[in-house]
Image (cartoon, rainbow, N blue to C red; front, side, top):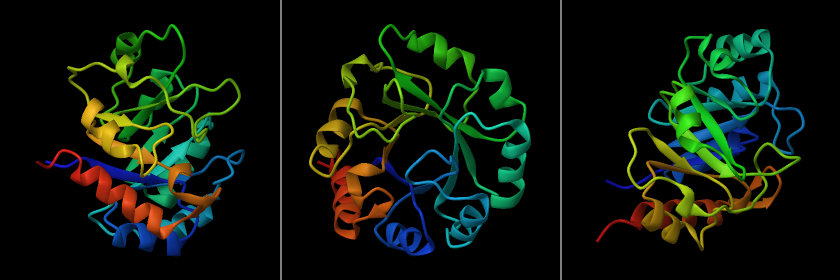
Length: 208
């Protein structure tokens, strides 16, 4: 079975339609005002209306307060939340809503403890560490730090591009891969050719 592909940082309806035509399995909407790919709740809801039932709609949040999270759930109606900040397990779980937990691969991280602490039914997304950014850095981390055997859904992110995604899928064998900057012309502007090539390369990587 081929890997699933999530295109994150979708900023308008046209991009959502393009990514779905190219075969994306999930689309990420960044509802975080400090991101260069930020969309408001209202914009996210508009984009959400163009996402087909077979494609997952993921609302990415960073250190939002509980009332804001509830607004996103009620107004955007995503399939999954993605907590990409410093949210505690209790905070993430209080909404009784399926979520992805992002784990930024800082030095000295106890990965097993992080995974055990969160009941992330949407899976765990592993991204590169940055001192001043919550994702979207375009940087790659050492994939060998990820466990070969696991009992959770693994989503690989961080510095993925059309030219390295095949190796990433072969080496890590993730359940899903996540890309944003690696398929863009500029921040928030997806390149249709890069999107199509990335998805094709990812999905063909394990087919022999």
